[in-house]
Image 1 (cartoon, rainbow, N blue to C red):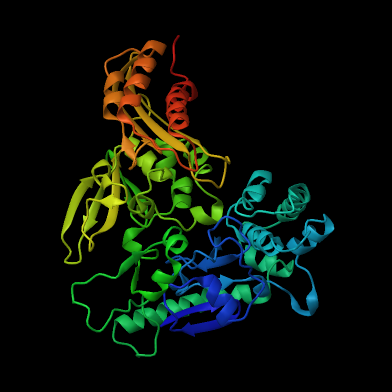
Image 2 (cartoon, one colour; image 1 turned 45 degrees about the horizontal axis):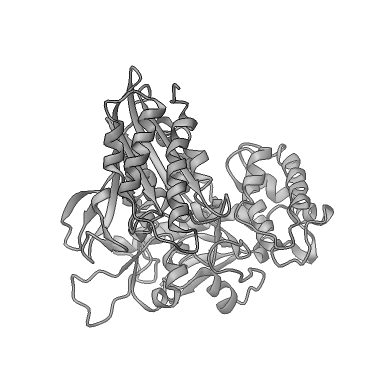
Length: 489
């Protein structure tokens, strides 16, 4: 049974773990403030806050998430907040709501709740508010009435108020200022009580206590070794197969502690498979080896989606234009796979893809770890480029990444990857080989561009013709060198 707090209420439900949080909130709990929009994580009308109490901490960490793509099971043991959960008694507006009203930021009103929740999540953030961060908090919300300037003014007004927020005891201050109701102060203790109950259950406590993780239901006639469908952040499966995922057993990995985290182990960077794109963006380990990573990840998805989507999920989705996949191919990543019997094996990421949506893994294998050699700060260079119809919140027409090792102006090693130009996410080994041993020059680049054209096989689709995609890759390969400032002539 799933147990979590929804606003100020403890929820116990046996609804399928693979169903969406949005449907549970609206149709089971009848909280209609959370809107149904695109059901693809683009519009932000269904935005809610999900709070988690990290182990050993006394403060709940809240993140904005699109509830249309949040598996209900991922709410287990957490605090889910809808707009009804921040509204004060007697119809009083919160400072976030008041700022939007004051600046005429609500037009048709359909998207307004999503903006309110995103800005409230920003107010609850542990990070100090800045003019940039308050705007970034709304990057997953779309206003179809195109009234962004009024919303930007409301966000600026909110930022001014948040400059007075203390670094500690922030929730108490926010409650005093009516950003959130007073019950938020009790949530750390409530979530800790759920965790304590889980611990008691695993050590022989009462059968009524909460389990350590959301249960996995299996058919009665399922073989003992059968593995349920693995579900991470839900940002792909709940777009493509929502009804199917709801109807089948799922194994939730988003909150599995052993699959989280980023660390450096000597000259190797190791990531748990359930690491999210947002955790990549905020990781000091990753920023030390790829300083431009925040700029790259801003092109990948919105803040709510980055806080949900996992790195391994992007790999296993096997999209030919998976942004994270393209990055990690150029970084030289390999993955560790574990089957239902606990047997493990390593596989280069480039060898995972056999054909369109075909993987070199068995049905019962899951990714447990991702690792890649740490780039050397002095000699190694990394860049990512992407072209899509929209700069943000869009799937790439073509994307590409480059890793180069330079010594005395000569390319000593190289990896080039490209997406959208073949049936799988691709390494371009021949084009990379054309760079190795050569001085950095326009002539060297042109040779590699020519070889790359022989390695790819794009097709025309809604994101462009095959000819257009060839031109894009040609230009983006040059963009790597221009962006890195490496061309000498």
